[in-house]
Image 1 (cartoon, rainbow, N blue to C red):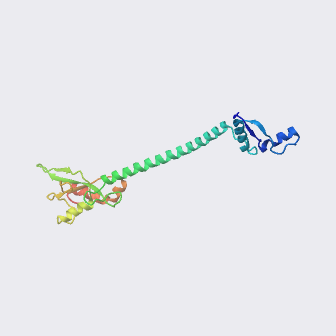
Image 2 (cartoon, helix red, strand yellow):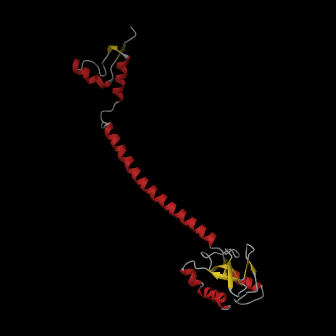
Image 3 (cartoon, rainbow, N blue to C red):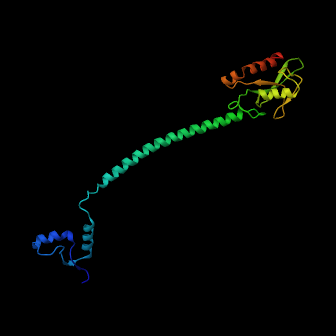
Length: 209
């Protein structure tokens, strides 16, 4: 009627039919006139199944194992990523501070800085007397090194650090000054230029070093 197949069963079932007819039928004999397509598909599935292999693990076991792996990797990677992020932030913060220090602690004339170069920084001062003979000072808010200050002195024809009340030097921004006031940055900077610092203050106060 078009809904059944006549076929011989596969060899996997030969032993079944031998037990029925005492082995009279030849091997793989399992002929059936009422074999449907669904039965054939089921038979094919059985044919490709391998009974000698271990049974597949339960789905719950697979899910549990996957979760364990994911959890382990997540914890390790999260910890590693957190450490890397903190290290990167610290490095960026340090680099930013270094850039800011280089910008702020750089001589406006020589372009040297106290971090990378052996210099002593200070502010230019314009020191003058008022009508009562008292000293007054104006600070030029731009850092220059002691070497830059000495170079200006030498350009004027003088050869020593002295009281230059009647001389005026020109700063990078065009401001007048005639003295130089060293600044305290840190202990190392002070120790490095201690003599220069003391002499500069002495000149401002006494008129000579």
